[in-house]
Image 1 (cartoon, one colour):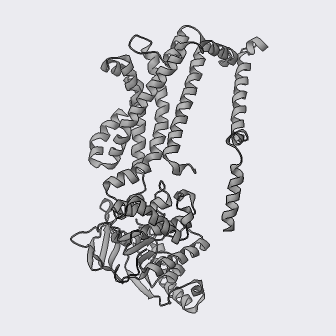
Image 2 (cartoon, each protein chain N blue to C red; image 1 turned 90 degrees about the vertical axis):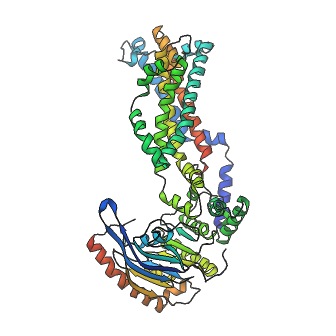
Image 3 (cartoon, helix red, strand yellow; image 1 turned 30 degrees about the horizontal axis):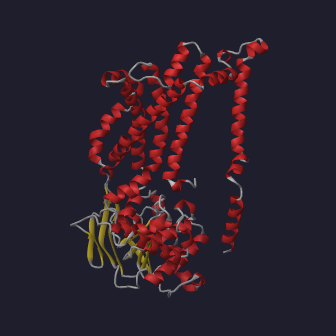
Length: 285
Length: 279
């Protein structure tokens, strides 16, 4: 009883700290900030070394310094073309990714729970899986009528295989005792699927989603570079980088690269957020 | 909770043999084993690791088939030559060695699961009953917590409540307190004895802990090393309700010694043979 009272009073004390206060006193956050600032200073010094010290540092000396990159960024922040690139790439990533989730999750679960389905579909799946998504680019250009659809298809493939293999692995590794316990308590196949197999697979689904999301960004950027900015689709951050490179504005290339980094980070945060809200029992870990 | 009812839950194991056949290599886990457990009895099963205790439990629960013999529950055939694998059912609830509470459900939701999937209660009724039963077991205030948030003792107690809400005829416990420290174990024993005194449910309890076996059981069955068969049955006539004073009595000590001797012999045989645990 006294323990309970004590723990209550401890938790009420810790609740008094506001979220902002907690964030500002978080050592991990500050370590991250210091590391980031340190890296930027290092980059600036190395890039400017020829101007400042008369010695060019190999590789990094050829990269424009952060000040130049920020200036280039400031310039293009007003261009609708830049934001349109963001919009196009993000749209493609989420379209491909969402379709991959919608098809991949049930497909992976079916492979896991139905032996006949597995016998029929797993071998062709395993033959197609090792083919890198970018190897599909020429075929998909031939196969799909528009560039946009070709990019969407290749993006979809990037996430699909990863999601399926994670869902399959996750569902197959559910502890048999959960299934036995549920069956003993009277669960039928339907209950077993919705109340045991699906929640038991959720951690693997979100792992697959996080990895799949990373791959879709890689794939979408590469396919945008290949597709160019034609009439039927094209554009996007990948094309933005490529055209900046062709135009010789290296600072803008780096702006594009950092933009992708930020976009990827935001997408992963979104996936993590979905994981947290759909798996409340994992919040304690 | 179930009414006191000693007329149900009698298990009759008759000449049961189980041969595992992994990759064509026959491994006999249980050999011609017969055991009568009257309704409302606490039957403790002890024996060396891998001797086939769990195989017997799995056969009663309907997780595995048997090769020969029959198992009856209240005179009804569970499994036998005509159907080697018993159907799983809520009349025989299992509490597993490593715990099988669904991590994605709160303790309350875990307990309410059985009546909901069986369709015998509405969701609201089941949750209300679950909370009531958890409160009765002294863990009502953690009903809304997930299994990962509570101690192993609380989780195991909830698992027994989850079994009891289904009003089973038999509780099948497979070393449920194996990984617990002595202190937690003693609390778990008290709480199980309390449950038993209230429900008089038949209990089939596998353990390696001889003191636990004598303290909880009406009968301790010592199994031989694999293939399992009955080596010795020790009747425990210590009156109920029992408490921790029981552990210090001469009667208790003598019974532990008697059982220890039988188990030690088998454990040595198993050790010499280098037995590996079977599922």
